[in-house]
Length: 351
Length: 284
Ligand SMILES: Nc1ncnc2c1ncn2[C@@H]1O[C@H](COP(=O)(O)OP(=O)(O)OP(=O)(O)O)[C@@H](O)[C@H]1O
Ligand SMILES: [Mg+2]
Image (cartoon, rainbow over all chains, first blue to last red):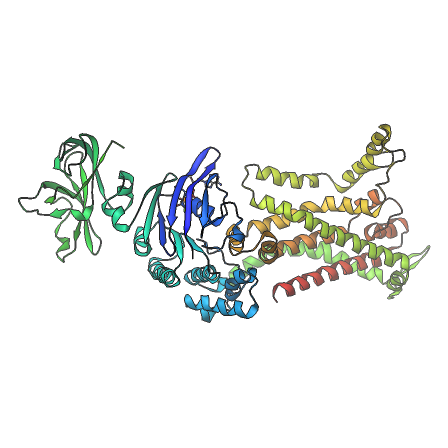
């Protein structure tokens, strides 16, 4: 339990910058989630915090102490590996007690604390099993208990749930979040699963190409993305490319004239629209009213997803809440849609 | 496929190996044992008998027990040296991400391309009292009398170690490669310095390789022939050359068979013993 500060953390691999200038201040007790496309440097960042990778530059401070050049065994970070990394030749109890043994804690206290950690993940009944005699979900919880038992200053989780099935993943992530809050732990988790990120995080960090693109709450990232990349990466969205003709007027590549927020100066731009912000059969006074042909309709349960062609160039994805009458719209139908002027986000530039 | 058919198929697959083992190993072994119970009468070669006097002679004559003890000692020392030197090398080979990994592996195996006898002969040329090394050192005036490296137990140990090291490295490397790297990192992360990580995590998990490599080098060390003969010199006796001497030079087949059997039994007993000990330690 401690504050973690990364300052200008950088890693080069042979001239190639994998992580560049990552600066983060994570207060005591915060759950931070790292999001980003594959290869953007999330694991590298986490491993620099744990001490497995020597940074090329920058510093790591944990609980006010500079640990940048400390070996991993003197850092007191608790890492949960994607592959669990349990010691196959030790029982569950021995696995969990290992870190305490390394801290030269007496046998009685060691066993008590190991059992307590196992109880936290509801596995105290399986203390004498070997890892291979357990299911994936159970092994993952042992790995968690093992990391918690040492009372780490910071809990590091690198895609801890990616080997579990969807149902179990939901259960374990809630469990992780509850334990983290209950113990007041500082935690950083890497995940590819956005829903997972949104449920557990106090704050999220979006990375791309080794850099931080945005730090913020769920709402910040979703409603006020810092750039087009974040807008496209967090949640579903449609990007329409075109030009801002005059403040408040956007013309798409396909010639659609759309009303938009007025802050962006005229020039090449793109308009990002969330699929659920668009509605069917808009009132006559709606700012943007369009007709389109349904090219694809899919029934997702709570929502109905439609892909529409608005012009020769312009496509849009729409999510409609499922109110029962779903199967009514089919591919080939023509529908009319609309959205208010301030719904979309406009980003200047062509990229 | 039915279960019976599958069984028959499996039996068919292992039959050739079984046959080779039976004909090539068990038959001569049985014959050897039978010979060791025969009596040697000079001039008459081998007389049919059922006697243990050859074994009594072996174990009561200090010359032979010394040879046995020396052989065991050399094999054991070689095994330990191979393990200590081979483990780091095997570890590096297993964990390297270098493009030249296969080349490195080849380099480890390369010495095996040269037969033991050829290699030992080479060493004689290099390290003998009139060999290249001594000649150059004396020529340069560094030493005045040749250094005696050849014909010592140390030289034999070095020689056998050089032969056996690749076997140890390969056995260890294949096992270490199968150990998840993140298990080592987990140990570090939980506060284990490298020494404790090695002792508590890596070594126990690499134990199958340690055992396989250890048994292999020990057996090879016990049975070494060319290296002790060529590097140890004519007066240096270990069990392998002793067997040969009895069979070929003395023509004493019964006693030669006895020595061979003692050698085999000692090897077998010692390897199974260490096997049991290791397993007991692992499954405490
Ligand atoms: N040892 C290394 N040598 C050279 N390049 C490396 C090394 N390790 C990682 N990289 C590169 O650094 C980049 C970032 O890797 P990293 O594992 O941090 O990505 P990531 O964000 O965790 O991706 P993923 O989501 O796929 O796990 C990748 O492009 C990778 O190829
Ligand atoms: Mg990763």
